[in-house]
Amino acid sequence: MSRERKDAAAEVVSGQNLPWWIAGAAMFALIFVVGLSMVRPGPGPVPTAGSSSGAAPAAGGALPDISQMSPIEAADRLFNRVMTSVSVGDSAAAQQFLPMAIAAYNRARPLNLDGLFHLSMLNRTAGNLEAALDNALEIVEEDPNHLLGLAAAAEAAVELGELDEAEAHYRRIVEIYDDESQRSLEEYSMHSQIMTVLKEEAEQFLAGR
Image 1 (cartoon, rainbow, N blue to C red):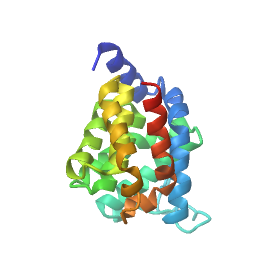
Image 2 (spheres, helix red, strand yellow):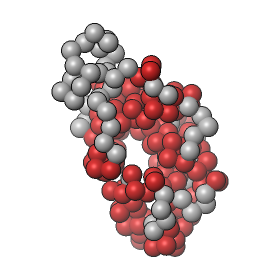
Image 3 (cartoon, rainbow, N blue to C red):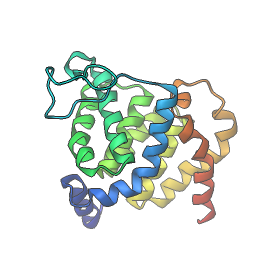
Image 4 (tube, helix red, strand yellow):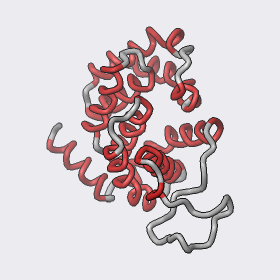
């Protein structure tokens, strides 16, 4: 990674550039949140740092205590909180929960492919671009045709300036999309709103090469 890219990533993590980064990620996050709410309704929101078990119940019931959840349940809940914050441009909440969510997924390892996709997306949102690419490549190494893994790898590669690598991932998406998108994978159903735009995004990138 170049010195300039390292400095930019550091500023994102520290919060100096987070509103700009959120603006770039908001549409993807909004697609994710809408799709997730359609196919996997979950319990109430993650409590903020100032909440406690004695706080007043939220509209949907008592505030959840993530300390009572399994590691992956806690990680997923924090991921949802981050993505919801990103989708509405709430940089303060996103900055608060991003490191917690990333740490939660790392504690929950070994992760399934959907968990790795979530971790890649979180690292990309935080500006940890090399980590985001590494997470995506973990998916592709296990399942070379996994569309979400290929897309996450391509997007991270673009932001790292690795356009040849991004092109390879996008070309693979275009080649296999019609058949691969029909696979009965839970994460494909959960992220159906994202799945519908992957091929178009890949074709748009390739048209500019």
